[in-house]
Amino acid sequence: MAIDALSNSLAAYTQSTGSTAKAQETPALTAAGVEKAVRQNTASQILQASAEVSIKAGDESQTLLFKSAISRINELLAPEFGDNALQAAAANQDNSPQATADRILSLSTGFYSAYSAQHQGEDQTQVLNNFVDVIRSGFEQGFNEAKDILKGLKVLDGDIASGIQNTWDLVQKGYDDFLNKQLSSIKTETEPAAKPAQSA
Image (cartoon, rainbow, N blue to C red; front, top):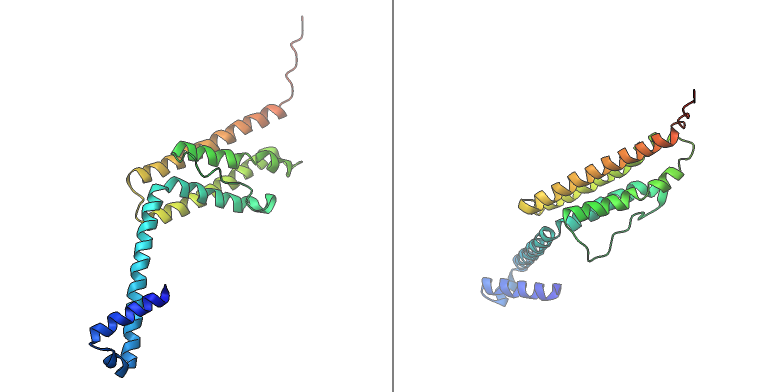
């Protein structure tokens, strides 16, 4: 393919200079012309590929957001659980903001029991807060990376922008709800049993 492109570029340049003989008489100019033609051809291919990626990314912004968030959460959990602690769901999945948020929340909060077990003997409230900080931080890093990619592809507007913002809000609320539920559970477990009322 590169040889064909080079041949086509050389042929185009030869035609523009008038003849093959003229091109052979000025080898430096011929080399420069070929290089220029190859650069133009490459630039055109890059622009076409970029446009295709932009269209695809616009259609699959929630998938990009999900993968980016899960990737970052995976990285932050890796020291304790190894690589790819969270696995992506099946390829054919609902990519609505709610479904994307639900998957992120389910996959990331699902590691709390294992995380807590690795921190036995520590203050469970602090362990919980640390865990939520780790997964929230991973989500936020992944979200911002996905958002930057979509901005760079100039597809972060309209429904795509509102969709990923909705996912952000749902995940943040989900982390808050998870934290509050677990704090309540810890509080219940650590409170002494109520004394029975004494009869008169």
